[in-house]
Length: 401
Image: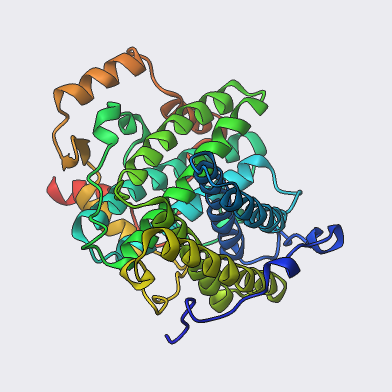
């Protein structure tokens, strides 16, 4: 790949403002769109929201009024981008339908990152998390069938399997065991920084989504399931954000954010199947190139370093949404019984984990277990979508008998 975002010139800032007509994007058709087009939309919304919130945090810690004004200018344009991206989602989709798409993003984006991550410790962090999001998809799919009388296959198609992962009941860990070791910014591969930002942003928007939409349901089991999984998404944000080196300067972090936006818009422009959506990715890439240029100027002025100490002059291979069935099945067969202790991983249910389990569950069956039992009672069986034979853990159990 020869695309160098550090050399490309984008649209000047004073030409980036959109009017209402331009912001009034046509949403995708939920019945005919490629499920991965919806995944790209959800992923980019998370990236844009993270960019906006990071800019706000930087502004709150910056004493220079001129810089705060520049950040406000770019941030307003990022906010317009976020609206255009998120409004590509169709209003016809229910909250649960969108929830299934969010979890499909979590499964297939995190799987792709885990497969591509060069650092073994960071790779393990993504492998650990994906088995939990995989199980969330299974729980929500059963809720979807029970409440809306529809199959999750209508949302995820045959691209992502729906079956048990690491049981959600076991995701509740003591908060201290959700904090990982950060990468070393001076030694890590630049792609690892982009991976960490991407998955952190994706999980963060899922956490925010669940904490806001959960109480909108009337059905007690739906309210309770969103509450339970929403707490786990908070754990996931802690898990992923702690991978980022806290020694990065504000200007370094700003460059990483803007570079990552360029990387993802370029990736999705290269892989998008919907021409109208692809045009949005292309427009936003050209806007982000200018945002990156301005961030690099601030970095050079305040950190006094060559920006290539922080980011690569060439974009990595494009991020790709694609089926990861074989990869997830391998993880199910080898890592389903993992939990965390300190900054590491173990198979044993240690004392701190067991104490937290007793405290939060209080001897009761959690919503994530009840939703399966309730759907089995109502539909005659739980919902699964297995496209490549029996569940690998069940196959292993049968082989051991």
